[in-house]
Image (tube, rainbow, N blue to C red):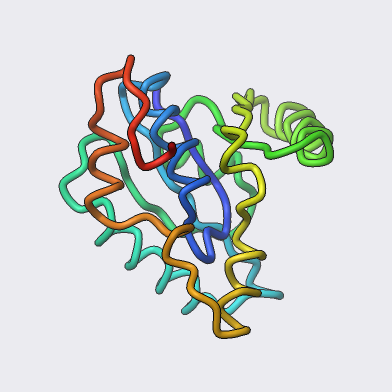
Length: 166
């Protein structure tokens, strides 16, 4: 079965990479990174830019696809051939939100969601935090994975914890 990992990924962080890498171990048929955008709130060009960046980041990584989409996530997941949604959460507040979203996706689209908790060392990392740091001139490189880190994390032995997360 293939999973659909949806988000804005603006930017894609090491926390996202951790969920993706662990998802690939659970779903050997692959994970589609779905870059969602709301045409009433988001410029479609920004979703396309994120998609282009992620395609480059995961170029050559087996099992990872990138697909920008609008509309309902469950519809995009089905169109991408996924049978389950993959989501991560950092804390209890995120978990409650994700549970509600999972219930809605099951009710509306009949699709289950697999929720993975973040690693403790990554729980403070969010795209919002990284954007705020960037906007204030701070270095964010420790939160953003390189192409090499993506390859190592997504191609590592399933029993190993890639050192980029330690």
